[in-house]
Amino acid sequence: MSPSRDRPNILLIMADQLVPMLMGAYDHPVVQTPNLNRLVENGVRFDAAYTACPLCAPARAALATGRYISAIGAWDNASTFDDTEPTLQHYLARAGYETIASGKLHYIGADQLHGYRRRLTTDIYPAGLNMLPTNKRKPAERFIDRRSHARGYALPQVGVRTWTQFLAYDTETQFRAVEYLYGRACAGRPSRPDLGSEEPFFLSVSFHCPHDPFQVTQELWDLYEGQEIDIPQYPPDMEETYSIMDRWLNAYHGTDRIDIKAPESLYALRRSYYGLVTFIDRQVGELLRVLEETGLRENTIVFFTSDHGDMLAEKNMVQKRALYEWSARVPLIAHFPDGWGAGKTVRTPVNLIDLVPTVLDLAGVQERLPLDGLSLLPLIEGRENGRLTFSESHTNGVYAPCFMVREGDYKLIYIHEGQGERQLFNLAQDPGEWHNLANDPGHAALCDHLLQLILARFDPDDIEARLQASLDKRHLVDAANKANDVHWDYEPRFDAAKQYCR
Image 1 (cartoon, one colour):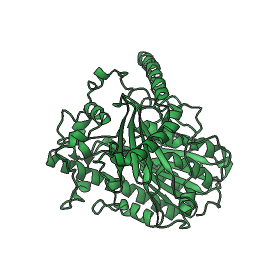
Image 2 (spheres, helix red, strand yellow):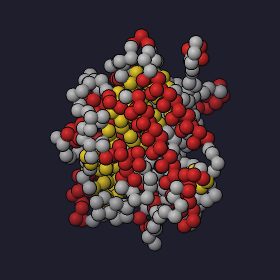
Image 3 (cartoon, rainbow, N blue to C red):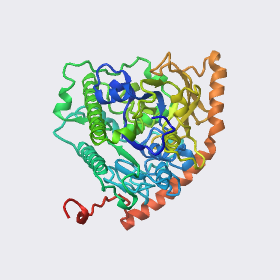
Image 4 (cartoon, rainbow, N blue to C red):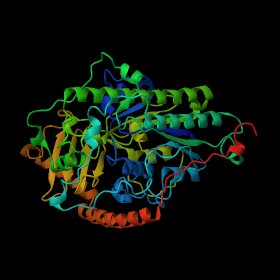
């Protein structure tokens, strides 16, 4: 579908904590993703897509607004999402779209719609300040906020279960999305009949998996019986490669006191993850099948992505929050119903915040406020080759402003601590990010250039001051909300008087 065709339907499918390197659609030889493989074969695959922040709520707020997290104050998983920030949903709703969400949004605050007309499910995590970080920024206190995340990456916490609440959540998310699509295909059944059946839709379907816990059904586990399961390899001098950010996160996640490196645990972790990735692929396949069955696919553009990745024991690290590839890189696939761009691979660095201007261009929405993201259409059309992108991580186990910039094959991570710590990697030659080139005299000019790109975009001292002020305010409000038993969780409403045969 060329960008000149107006008012297409938009289906945005999201996974959570999905690593592109562990997807058949990104050329992994074992992980089964046949539906995503077909989406890539007939669509556009972005091979250097990044999250604006490797943490759930900030990443999703950035995706929705098309702006970096420091621009909107979305610092962590307990940062309230400002209800006056224009989102993609606001723009599309104003342009006449029906905006619907099924599944996880992880919006924090009293506004749980942010431009959506309806949400078809509640959220899987609390919408309040429950995940508020401790306000400890003093150097002596940075290694005492120990959590137990690492336990969930080792036996017996990984492996086979009969069922989990997380599989249940994704099953409900899928059912509601499928129900909505079938309803759209029935004459006279849009949620606003007064607007007519020609009203285009923007539907986001957002799953929890393959986010931890890494627990799968026996059937998903058995899919990988006898298959080669990749497990991380650790050099003997691994700890010498750690940055201060790595040490903070390993203390925060507990990997400095819980051994996750046992081969049997790593095997079970990765095999379970493979199964969860295939589970997500099946959901994608059903959504695409329903679009085909109902005729909606003829005018529906599909995007598939994730909010961030997961270290999955690479470098002896777990979870997200880090700015390494396994944590910060995401899959991004675009499919157009007329085959526009089919089979194209884009290797230019892009970002989740680029989805807002891209979708607005496709929907013909010209009037918009300033955005940090850039439309992906010039890259698909081949009219643009070079651009750079950034990511940020400042709290939730990180104790100083931290940034990443990717330009071409090179990536710089900058930690605004003391005199400033730098990590420079050539990803083409060193995809595992083991060889820091920042102190190599031959790369000094490049390192300085990339650092200047970061400092031209971001003010670390201002970010630190704003974050500190935000933490102080939120700790006060959180205490009051607990005293008053205030909750912001979304409760979906279904009017039984208008359902089925009435």
